Length: 67
Image 1 (cartoon, rainbow, N blue to C red):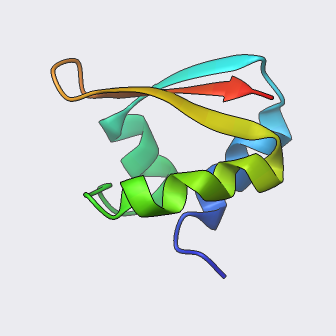
Image 2 (tube, one colour):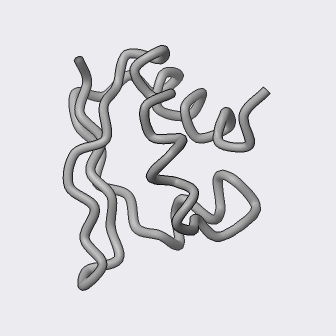
């Protein structure tokens, strides 16, 4: 089980076409801050019907798009 599985499950459960989640919202879902390892794990989102779009370091947000 991936440490990011709660996030992927959240996306799938709520089934929106697009999410723009702040780092803080992601922390609330996961229980920990995302770090550079997120770049490795982001491919897992496809298994749940989503892809990671733009990651904004400036805005501290991540966009997820439904595939």
